[in-house]
View 1 (cartoon, rainbow, N blue to C red):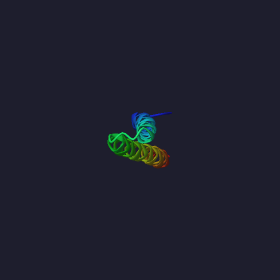
View 2: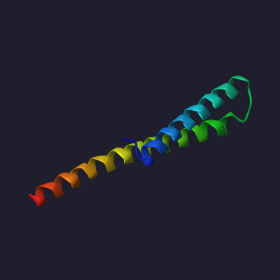
View 3: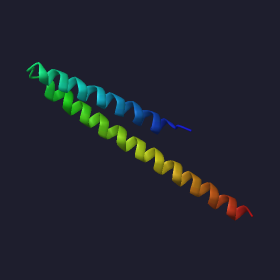
Amino acid sequence: MINKYMRRGLWFILIGIAFNFLGYYLMEGDEFKYGWAMVIGTVAFGTGFLFVIYSLMRKMDRKALLKDRSETEE
């Protein structure tokens, strides 16, 4: 099951990779604008990674809460 944080994280990771590839492409053409593409790509990739980690932490915490509640009901 993919929640909204996992979905956002994966999209940000893909966008980050795309901007980094764009930066490398612009770097080969001796353009001076490649730096901004690389910075945006790196920030987007990092944000996506954090979203994915947060999603996994929420999933583990939810499972622990459900397990705890089921034990208290018994």
